[in-house]
Length: 260
Length: 309
Image (cartoon, rainbow over all chains, first blue to last red; front, side, top):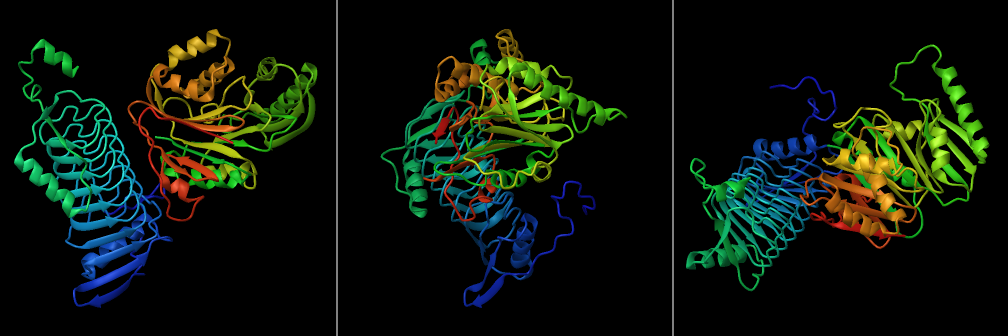
């Protein structure tokens, strides 16, 4: 649908791709670089789309992202993206395929609803990291805020540092590896999936229970941490759903009290 | 939604008027209804008071300007009567004034006496604090009140998307901690036990000018500090005693504090360096005062942070 009315001046319906990137074609495909300092959010995203979809560039570097919101969203192609700095909220959301390396930090809701690909964040991440993640790997080398992987339905979230409260809230499928400490309410109301924690746990959420690590878990943890060069902590503990809340029709009074 | 921002120069001063304007303007999308500034200029022997006599969006009848003029004269008359030596009275707008005066008595009787003038509200009172708030975005408020070039040590600001009360100056942040000098608060969130705290604070003699839940935070903290608690202790107690979701910033004559509720429901991004601390709801705001790539982090739930000058 074409937007024709822009009361708040945010949608920029008339924005065009600025066509400022320098493109180099080498043996392994073409590379492009552009500076985003003077561009609006929409211009940056239009330029990315132009490079990836129209020019067929497979490796794009964005300089000076300036912590702007909603950068590199909705990219549905295999490509490599490097962000030379920090992003604001909703960065790299709704993507399917790209490998994105962010050399700074990200705000809230990074890689929201990612279907596949890799998002690697060198520094910290805000709350709601990987909200509703469906697939791919989301790696944060620093600390993350609260409610990481809320409503996660697949994929893997790997955190090198600490995580805030309610990590894995309503987790439905997929896995999270937290190398540091986690805040209160870990895995609250999770349905399925697994949470691996290397550090201290403040408290467990409703219907989240500890499970034993299997040989498959050890192999998975070692492989994922090796890929991203993250130093494993001493030992991991695994947390899964206690499945007491799976069936709502015949809850015992004790379980009913648990959820309310 | 609302956006909040704070900045403190740990040594020396800066153009906090411009800094706060650009920080707030970059978060205009978080709330375009009204914008407010709490700025700390160099401490002065004189008291500085900011008042408003009417709201810019209220219906104006034929006698509007005359009535405001009469009320302004009444404020001046009452200041003289209560024993204040007025230095300068300056009309920033037809309905908003900045008054400097010499006065050594209690602040509460003075504030009450001034606010007894119809339509009058004391927005701030102190030796260095000045609260400027009005409708529309930060740049237009800064323009109307000539805030660019305001030199000072620390400041907080707020862009408001009204959810709990009216769009007018009384409902805009920051809130002065009536009647305690040089304390102000901005808040992003909703307090669910507002009415309980409002009644409790009203019983100890405080007045509230708006229906806005954020107004109680300033008075709550100031009352605790007046009772001998440090700013940090008062803020820690607020985590247990205030219900709801909040991230708030508080400023006093020499410090800036930030607190987050136990659900970590509202954002805050923090940048800290030896010279400067800047906080905001979004990193884009901090980037308007620091142009390069920086390391920032988000405080966790139940964190209380205080910086002193």
